[in-house]
Image 1 (cartoon, helix red, strand yellow):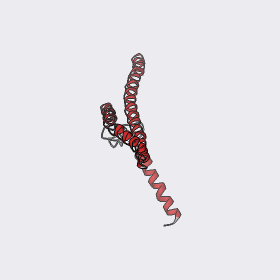
Image 2 (cartoon, one colour):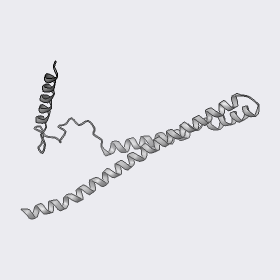
Image 3 (cartoon, one colour):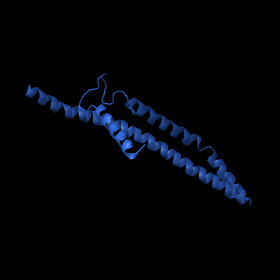
Image 4 (cartoon, helix red, strand yellow):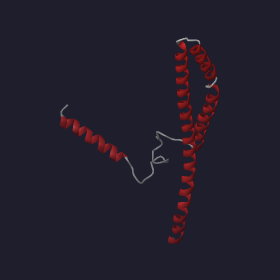
Length: 144
């Protein structure tokens, strides 16, 4: 296929897509602007549920992920004091675990907080939009 043929096909495909778009009108079979093929739909309840799940996981992980910390620290100190070379290795494992556990807990808190914020912000935006619509509808009454 030559460049000109390929270019003509691409232009035809773009023109077909452009003509298929119907701006400022409702789709033929009702529904929203996406024509019922929306890729991403999130409800307030879903945001709250995911945020709560992240929070619950964080609470459980902060309790259960810390069980081994005191024992590994004590073992590392005992091994080091007993002149065992493995004492420093056990202490290194303890430190790595603490670092990674803290990172994971912080990430879960961030997810939970962000989803709670998003849910609250969407609710505020909805109230603002509804408030902004009131003056417009009042003006419409005067125009009649």
